[in-house]
Length: 375
Ligand code: FAD
Ligand code: GLY
Image (cartoon, rainbow, N blue to C red):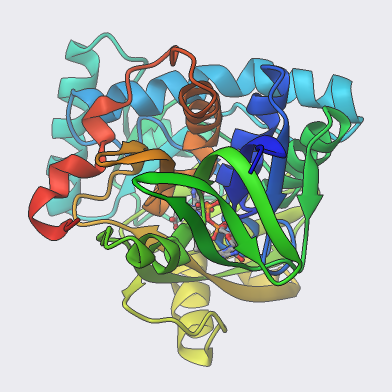
């Protein structure tokens, strides 16, 4: 069968939509299938922090991936706005990692030290300097690591902009369309089977987030991806009581451009139920008010949950699948899928179209979990 498209992408989260967008920018013919709605998975649930430095714990390929992706977001946002008229609402004000006790002061001081050695922008703040930067933080905040180049975005807006940008570039984006299986010829994946029929494709990208394993299992490729449930909520507060992303050991507080302050997030490995619970809302509310007392007066807006695609080392699984032609992985982005969407889209689109990736994603190959992958 002749390929109807160069790329069939399974999953319409921020990762699948970014691969679709970047593939159309490279001239690829693209079809994307999404079982529910675009952005209805983890991507629509995210806080949207672009924490390349706040989420990194040591120098190495993962830090390089995070930093490279953060660099791509600035131009990507401008390009998307130009192409679609949708503003993903980027804010580049930084992230403040706040210590309320000696143990966390030591942890963040160590982070500060290696980040400075790497030449990264980072400032160490004492209690007075914290209050200068963020006067509404509680007096429990004793020291903080300020990472001024981290940022944030509105994740549902980013996903919509990527999907619209892909559509305007000629991609066929199909919602309410579940991929039920992969079409295989010998050791080559030649398309995707859906309830609406087959989509013959030159290559297939699995970007199904926490559910990506369902299709790969069909080929005997067992990916170590598991759901890590996160509950999260929002209040209305304009003007916001804080200017930058604030994150301590109990919660984070993210002031959005649309007048909400997002407060997250719990972490529950292995839980598939996405609904927020009273316990989760109670925990986050208490933690946020301890951190920023002013928030106790903010009207409650909403609470929701999502399933992060977790991996054993917290890093994504990217690139081709050994032993299978035409199959590419873009999943396992755990806490950083929104941030990593830019570099994942750019790299996986290139590889799956048979071109050279501008970034070496080989350290994130599924081979690093060789013992849990069978063929
Ligand atoms: P998803 O968004 O889950 O998308 C996968 C899509 O695939 C789904 O829409 C699903 O319906 C579809 N799908 C699955 N199987 C099939 C199939 N067979 N056929 C068709 N469609 C299928 N990241 C950050 O960078 N910064 C943050 O601040 C941040 N905060 C977070 C806060 C919370 C509470 C949570 C839960 C996550 C957060 N994350 C954050 C992580 C980020 O949301 C994820 O890493 C990212 O969204 C993963 O994107 P994805 O496209 O792989 O998965
Ligand atoms: N990156 C924030 C979260 O996953 O909750």
